[in-house]
Length: 323
Ligand SMILES: Nc1nc2c(c(=O)[nH]1)N[C@H]1C(S)=C(S)[C@@H](COP(=O)(O)O)O[C@H]1N2
Ligand SMILES: [Mo]
Image (cartoon, rainbow, N blue to C red):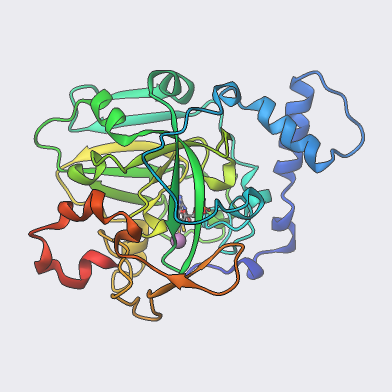
């Protein structure tokens, strides 16, 4: 993407292995009464992280068979280790850095034009929402793609919980903004943090709009946006905002992080369309993670039957609908 913030390779060497990650794990082990002097093996770390997540017992959840894939599910090791999460680093190699994000306690503020403004604890929210699994394609604006078994709940269920006023026209999503745990934030203080994204109410209540809390039958990993992220598979991946702390109902079209950085390249709508090139590269094809070569990209990423109707009568916007 267009990068004004410091590249990963410009970060100091120490950022690659932040002490907070190490200290965080040690802290957890101490709290759990485990005394392991030897360094943990990778598998051991994964188990420790699962145990630390009080939602682990909720998964796997029942698959909603409505949503079919036209390709293999991307291997978990790839989709959890090739990430965009600029709060941690501008490289794809953020999985280790992201472990410094504390995800409990975690609250989500629901505010703005709603009848029921509230700040809700993530585990309370998880208990109230109808969890299911969906297989979705994901198409990054950078022309790579993956196919993922997400777990979570329809965004519509959260909208119902908030009970929006009729004046609400948009939903604005906000990511955590803590430079102490996120070297990408502290290293680029001039960037327009926090990461913001938005949808219209019609988009948000479309059945495809999904709040992700899990992945591959487990809690969603930190690098993929724990404990709560968005998935809007007909739009470019940057719309799927990670690690959400605030959801605001508003009558103003939200100004996203990327639109603020580079509005000529990234806008509000960002619907996938292979016929509308990014100003600096073609969007006709995509590289599927884990596969050689490319496959053609589909209009609305193949989800036109669900969402094309949302945009009928909006053709005046022209290419703006697709970037
Ligand atoms: N807060 C936040 N959300 C974010 C991003 C980010 O940098 N910060 N990157 C976006 C982009 S460009 C993509 S493609 C997806 C990547 O999700 P993944 O790492 O789970 O594949 O997250 C999106 N959500
Ligand atoms: Mo992306």
